[in-house]
Image 1: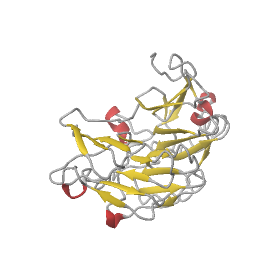
Image 2: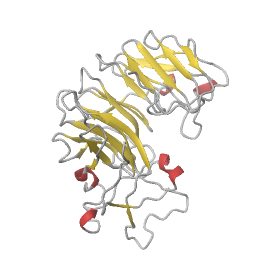
Image 3: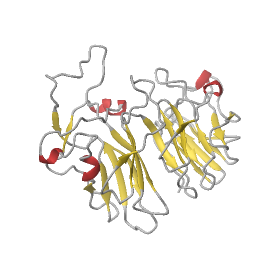
Image 4: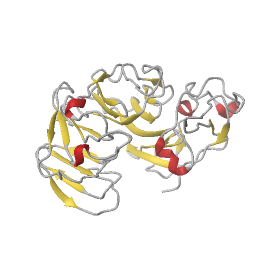
Length: 322
């Protein structure tokens, strides 16, 4: 597959990793611009069944690319890249608005602190209806095939910002939807688990911290029942490891109003596994996940019992059923 490249003239406003002595007004309160280059292809998704050859790719620094020939050629979606929430059309000059997309720590390994698109959900009823999620910006929706975009972050909360209900700056870790009930969307967010049953027009926080369901990276949704979802909880951002040294998978069947946790077959001592945002998947009654410590687990009864498929593999970044 040929490399994905930003077109000539694609620029963005630089973001910097916040530190205790960070001054957001520097230098001299003026935006700093940089020519765009691909640091990371974070996600690749298929178009609808009516679009053979259609692929989508999300990148750091926050670009959405589209291919109509199976990945042989790619084109940047300029309306999203030029969105007013990012500073406007920087192909044609300097910023006309503030860049409210923040950086993601996932970009720090590349020597930058820029946003990235990691989730792409195509509505099976209408291929022109797409949701994407960016860290750190939020959920963005198009209903016209990418010609226009709008933020869909109402009800989401950010406990790390002065205004937790700000329109932009949210950090969804992964967003996915129910194929048979596409208006049912879920996200595992930096600040909790969120559920929408109205196509992301509004979100409801459904964390249950007392049951360990709050922080984590992946989330999977039943293909038929949009109220059923699974997460693999983690202790927290500062201590990215399994809660209490033991792995668990938590499931809700009522839209997040209650959660059950399952441990049978999973290690319950000295478990330092973290499951990253693309490393959990579901197909029918089967679930599978892989961890950063190279362990892969499979359940064939909707997450209630597990068996190990392999240990000591390289870190597992993605798990998908074929």
